[in-house]
Image (cartoon, rainbow, N blue to C red; front, side, top):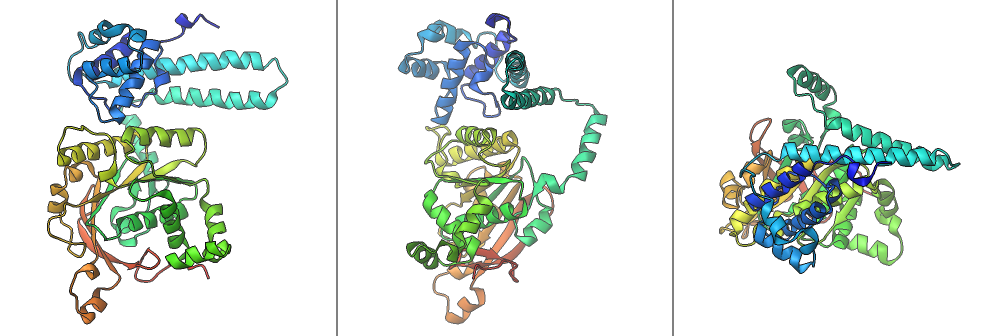
Length: 444
């Protein structure tokens, strides 16, 4: 095994990337490196503190970074103020970070390959064949990761990739289970953001949970990460069970009180979704933390590949500039969600609330409502508005009967397809979103 200093590393790339982000005064969320990808202990400590500043919504300028390192007692361990201040020297503002990121990642992969190969050579002399097989698989995964960094940008390569993409389109996209929406969009592809916007009391969380159940049912090889930032996870679980079983809240609680979980389908629900649905209710979680947590769950094989991340809702996300106005902060976070979808290579369903300008959940949602709430429209590949006319105050009994249970959707923006209005049926007692003729079966 080589001396540690002889292992592959890219000191200039590490300094350049850190210096560029210090110079631009913010942590670029499109950079998907881990702390361990950096070779220098100085740079690992600096990068770790940068991510912590980003999670807290603080700028990553020189002053903030120095103060954060000083509070942790690590300033002198990274070369002091002079080293931090010198990192941005000679780095142009706005320079692309991708080449430096690529060099750092490739060096890290080569180091891990060499370390894994050395460990394998020692392990091969023992009788532990099970661990040997495991480590060989790990080495193969590292090689595959190395190969993924070598991207052929030629037109012929792109055409071949496109042909393969079309061939496997169904496997590379997911459907939400709302037929009109799925038919008009053709499903949603990895890396896309679907933003659902509505006023209060419409049932945004229930709609999202119906989507989750449909995705899990339709895509048996996939998982969903549900970041329930408004609703505690116990309540989220309870509502998922309601939707799955087609039961009322009273029926679910009564069944658990008498120890008859099978009456509401709980054993079947757990058996089908136990390693495919993660519910996280950490208050104020940031986008970078969401990315790290989802990546860790998949790396540790706690869940199957995550193809859908649901964030409920945008207003409760942490991070973003603390000194910015609400609309500017929401706009910044919404743009970050797009980077999250690309980084995790999944679909993100983002729940957002309209501004509260003298309208209730019975009124149709328009593109103007979305624009009043921040740059939600710009960052979404698909923007959906929803409303329930039955929520209108003062309806006569006849008028209420005419609109009862009707849940309206409007596609306000779409990368594919056209704008459209359509409706589904909402069962308030079971929280189910249904087509006019239900294909779901209620637990007897």
